[in-house]
Amino acid sequence: MNRRLNIAPWLFLSPFLGLFAVFTVWPLIQSLFLSMQQTYGPGNSQWVGLHNFKYLLTDPLFWKATGNTVKFALGSLLIQLPVALGLAVLLNRPGLRGRAIFRLIFFAPSLVGLPFVAMLFAPIFEKHTGLLNKMVNFFIAEWPLDFPWTQNYVMSALIIAALWMYAGFNMVYFLAALQNVSKDLLEAAEIDGAGPWQRFWHITLPEITPVAGFVTLLSVIGSFQLFELSYIMLNDTAGPDNNGLTIVMYLYQTGFQTGDLGYASTIGWVLALILVSIAMIQRRILKRHEEN
Image (cartoon, rainbow, N blue to C red):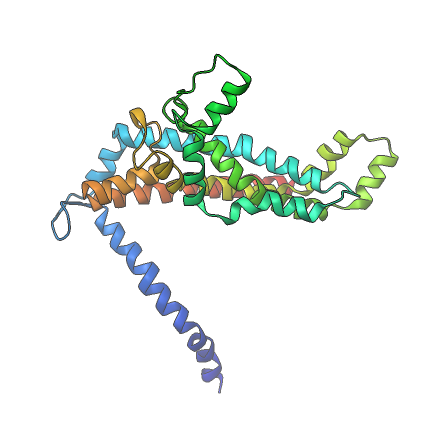
């Protein structure tokens, strides 16, 4: 009887474990072996050991892609998250009319998908007939209508497009966290003479720190996986001087355009290690914050 009880959970888990092993564990093992090979298209490969990893450390294109990705991630953290938090604070004000409508308006862009956002913003930043150039020229007559936004300010254009899409998405997380902040603490602080900024800094912000950490991690991971937005906005290219090249785009170019799936797997594993390291660092920071 006890043996049957011990087997029963594994029987229920077996479908998931089988699918997980076939579609996750086995591909990971295969990609690890593939990262130690140099491939020349399907079926042609040569074992090179750790050569791909050594070459990656001196690969200027990889470091260019990493620098661009880090710039985009910093833009997401320093611009997108404060905007999302600001919108959440505004919508959390008591007595605000039309809160549900505003929440829907701000959240709606995250429902359309990155390819649609890229196709929407590409003509906005277009060099000759772009909407942005026409709007700026309307207020500043000297502004040239052929100003190349996606050539001179590639990352800025991508950050603005991502801001429009994800600010409302992150706002929902912050809004949920703000609604769980203890009202008793806020009222007590107000009675003691604390102003709005003091209440926000000393009570609200510490209370929403776990959610803020979660949103930050999501933003960083999403930023390091940037591909569709830049690929479509830049017309299937990496932009002038590879200023729009990201790590995932470089992985795609290496694996599917150049045909070296081995080196592409190496890039993928290094990207995974970067994301795991970021997650571990953030977890340690949040743990220290909770202990204090």
